[in-house]
Structures are given as C-alpha cells and as structure tokens.
Image 1 (cartoon, rainbow, N blue to C red):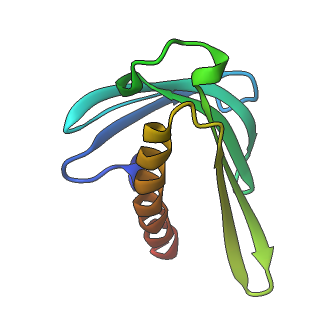
Image 2 (image 1 turned 90 degrees about the vertical axis):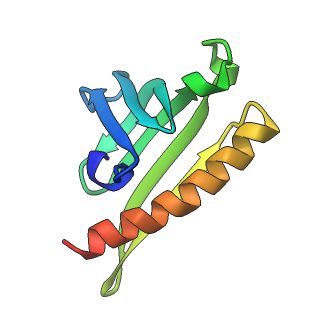
Amino acid sequence: MREWLGGDDYSVEVETAWTPGSAIVVRGKHHLSFENTGVVLAFQPCEELSFTHLSSLSRLPDEPSSYTKLSFVIQADGDRTVLKFEASGFPTPAIYRHLHFYWMGTLDAFKQYVESR
C-alpha cells in the first residue's frame, strides 16, 4: 500500500497484522494529516484484501455505521489479471463522493504500479 498510495506530496504508513479480525491503521499526510482505522475482514496474499475504513477527516463517531467496507479481489482471466474493487456502506453522500474520486485515481496508480513490476 505504501508504494501505490504514496507520492511526492503524499506520505503513508500502514500498521496491521494482515489477519482477519486485526486492526488496520493507515496514517499519513496528503495536504492534511489523517489516520484511517478499520478491521481486516479478509486477506489472502495476491488474491484478496477487504477491510473496514473510517477516516479521521470525516469526524464521524467510531461506531459501525460510520465505516465503509473496501474489497479488492485479484483473479486470473485467461492471459490477463483482473482486479475487482468494491466499496460499500457509505455513511454520508460526501464520503461517497470523496471515496469515488479518490479510488478512481488510486486504482489507476495501482494499475501502473502492478504493470511496472
């Protein structure tokens, strides 16, 4: 995550044990400092990652209805690899708009990162 979420104006650190049920904390700075928290729901290296997400910038209370679920599944499709990304459970329309904007750019950066390997 550090490699494809980073950039010249973006710093990020990820803390997690990568086991289902463990906490995930993503701290960084992108114009403003932030700390995103959640729980790892699934993790199979090179296959699947899903976790809940609550940004400190949202100023929402730390309760289940404040979290968004993010899911990434990588699958073979003939001679191609397909990344399926799903986000669900947006607590506010503003969070939906922000995550939609953010993840469209991030998925492009992730694609470039993977293809350069």
